[in-house]
Length: 199
Picture (spheres, rainbow, N blue to C red):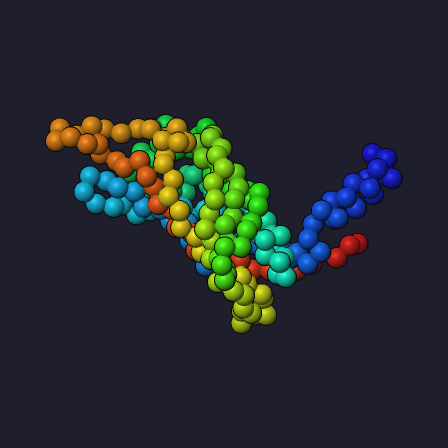
């Protein structure tokens, strides 16, 4: 590659980034990706155990930040192995064909003190739709090891049928076995990454 072209490309990329952006990586040990769905006459809760993501956070102007988040669909966990196996099958997530669920932000708008509407592309089961997450910024703090951390919370509801997950079973008494609406709850703690030093 032409060196001049490469240098111009690097400068253009840096110019597109917020000047005060800092990269925070999601800490899965102190974060949670949970969900709730209706089953017959109760609500079943579950979670995904394998996820990762980065937040390029402009601490002086949060709407200039961005989020890139990924979840391994096979890590679904409802504490019932047989049910989890069914959820991984082609009836639901079909994890062999669609191993990942992701969200990549497109815009962030302030909606109040420490509250933001984060709009982006949400992909699940091979289907991508634009959704807006109501995110609460829980602030930043230093941990006991000198690291800088930031916290975020969000809850939203999606319809699984919008993403091609349509399996169900009719009941003799009327209605169906599994609900269509899924409540998603994310509690995120992210840790600031050390700046890269050029060689």
